[in-house]
Image 1: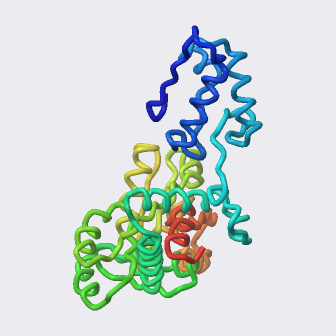
Image 2: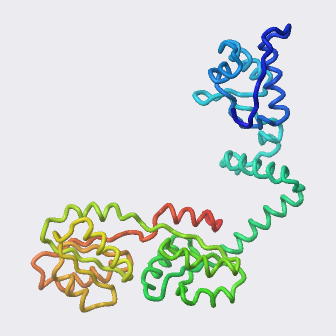
Image 3: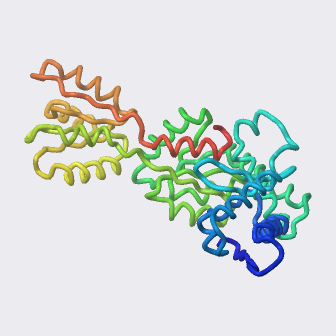
Length: 330
């Protein structure tokens, strides 16, 4: 059993077995061997442990519930009931109503700090210092990627500024250490490809690094899988790194069935050639307007306009929402 609580029933005692079990469970709750929120053993389990009939155990649980020590949750089990401040009855606010589980987590964390010997004042200082630090970190957000692929960083900056509604600075990974020397707080954001290097640079300066997950491109992959054989697929992006990975992924999906032509947004010559040869073009949001314009300019040379598909996001939605919460913006 959890918390190593064991029950001993003396079958030859004048004290009824149900009374013995009731008092022992009551003691386990009162001594906090069973803390608030703890799930008691099922009637079947407790019957096996004690040798009592399940009906007897059920009777004891009903008695405990009548006294207000435990509560039954349908389909889940019997739980030790929180009392007084443990149940959150001392505070009432719209925030508590909106995040009841979060409030329980705060209470549990505070209980653990007190259990480790912290005073209430010390616990308050710990909470406030962490909150203050995170608020200061949110005042400056730095996106970092290697200098060879600033295009990926530009995509991240565009998306984060649109989502977070705050200025975001792009810093080459090679210059990150120098930039962090000049700031006392901030948050560094990068993709998981570069998280190790970024943390190595930022950790000694007590600056946190938050990795973001890139989009899974499920819709684009589905489209690629349906493109007829021997067609030409065009890929356009700000980032050479993204193009390189995309070409590998397309090859892993279709092998030599498709001809793949990739072009960076700033490579006008290659972009114009791609527009004239591809039946399907997939580009990032930052490239969409330029690619669309290139198609219009080449319309007299095209038998049929290519299908233009814009990938809406580079960063996954879950990562952006998590980042908002971490920065206190969500």
